[in-house]
Image (cartoon, rainbow, N blue to C red; front, side):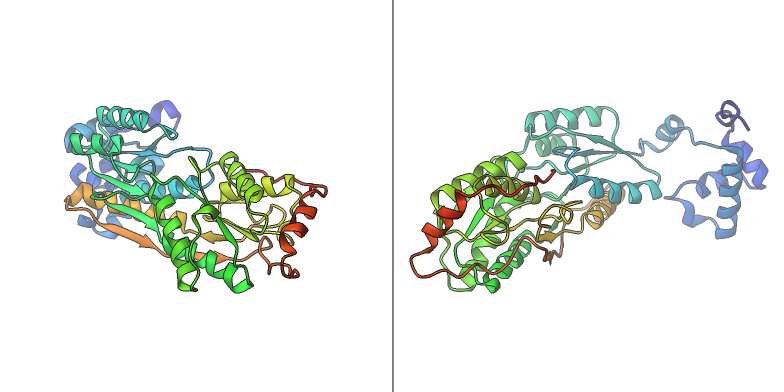
Length: 367
């Protein structure tokens, strides 16, 4: 059957070929209603629909059910490797339920994110997945509430909204505990933006891990970045290295910041991990291929997307209040961390300064 003919196949044609009533065929092809039809009948109707090239009329279905079967997703950087598995996991669940996913990228512009919410609402989106939310006074969340659109936050949290996040505090605590076990005591933090739940909670996890070992967090050893970018990580690491020559480890709030720290260390002539250790957070694709491979905190991004989509479908179907899902993190130890090199008392700053004047190590990681 040609593509032109396949567009002409109607539900009644499928029903007739399968030997069932059109209402039965409709239920068999609707993931939300399929449970009302016997499995052998569902299989027969689906086989006939596939063979005839039947495609549901989305406009007719929307008019009949009052739902568009469209879900919007906002991500702050579609090129960021972190979001690809989140979106793939969400699309897997949504597709199996008969929904299509539309993705918009407002970057870090909260006002633009709110505009996208309005546009998606105007197009009849049944719900939204938001990876852009700030902790407080987020315009996109305000637009969702004003429009009464079901929404679930993913990878970030905000009070009063359903969310699926990783254990940010626990994940950062794992990285710091690893550095402490190696013998590091002068550990600096390259933190994420304070207005984001990931930035705040990972900073809290960093400090809690130090206190658990009887060490007082030093604010002078913490740099808060304005964005999760490689460039921001390089600037923060350069400042820390310049001010504190005795720092032996950099704990970064995400992998892009860690890649920036690699750049700063190499420009300063510091070898990783011989002179300074570096940890990241996210285990984004290909950080195991840089030199040295990055020790980082692994987050189950695909599962995050799947659970967020499932939670959103439940809210669309049944409503209800806010609920939160926190997924566990795990530490992946690779080549960017090692025990600090022993030095004679009082010799560390001079030795580090001498190494810093040496030639930079060749190679440059790609973000």
